[in-house]
Image (cartoon, rainbow, N blue to C red; front, side, top):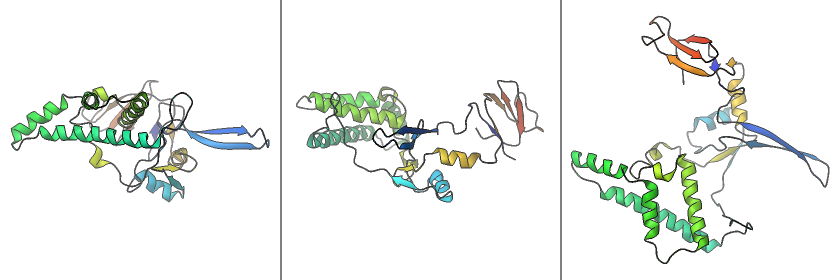
Length: 243
């Protein structure tokens, strides 16, 4: 038997699909749609278990197009295509330069590798990119700076952290474990998977977990398995707890 202990009043955690509706002022027809309030895309569709579940549920998904035109702040005019491509090349070159610097610290002996990895870890990715930008000639225009800043903001979004707290040595350490294939949207939203997974599964909502005790640890005897304690005073005992 499996139960879910959920701190919120809804299932899904980061995956939260909300329904949207409105009336077309011209026709009076009611239009409906969905919007993602949390995680919105499935990154990498090859081997991604969420995509496997979507296929099993016969939920269609759509590939996200690779083109991403940028629009200028103030007025919303589309950025000049040539400038956009130029800045994207410079951004990629900045990351390539960070990689070259990281490799330049390399050494053939184990002790040296340890020291140089530590040195690369002490350099922030943001600082390394800013150094690259300062060396660029001529000085970029306001539009070029804004476009470059967009790429930096997107990089922070992808890493869920500011660039000044990411190390040049380790910022991309999880890249080898990324799923391959296109990024996709699920038709109808990720909530369709959440609803399917939660079907016929007991879910205890508004149960904030405050501790998990394993056999042999404080609060749990060897014979009673895992003990999950909630802020409302309720406890659950189980053979296994998946956090």
